[in-house]
Amino acid sequence: MTNQKQMELGLAGANRCPRVVQRERRRHRAHWWFDHMRQVVERAMDWEPAPRFQPEQIWLPEAGKNNNHS
Figure 1 (cartoon, rainbow, N blue to C red):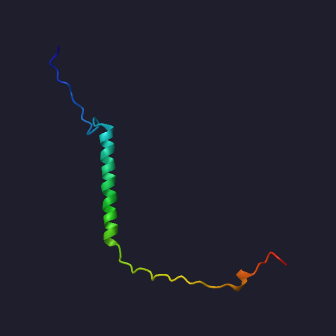
Figure 2: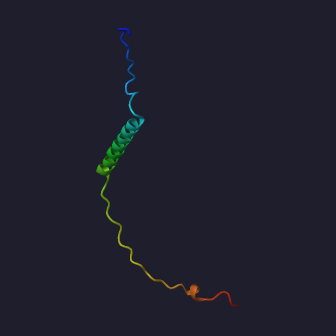
Figure 3: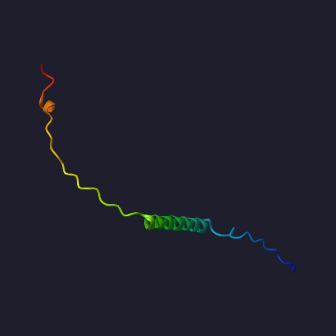
């Protein structure tokens, strides 16, 4: 047995589980998305509703004719 020390090589998160990394990326994307959606809602303008459409029944004189018989 030797008394030599083993040199450690740190790769800044390379030892982390890929699932943890994927979860953090998903969380970051979700935060980004919801932050942008909040901004969209804050900037939204109030709109007046369109006037209510009143249905109108009309008569077309040509629609009552049967064009198949001569």
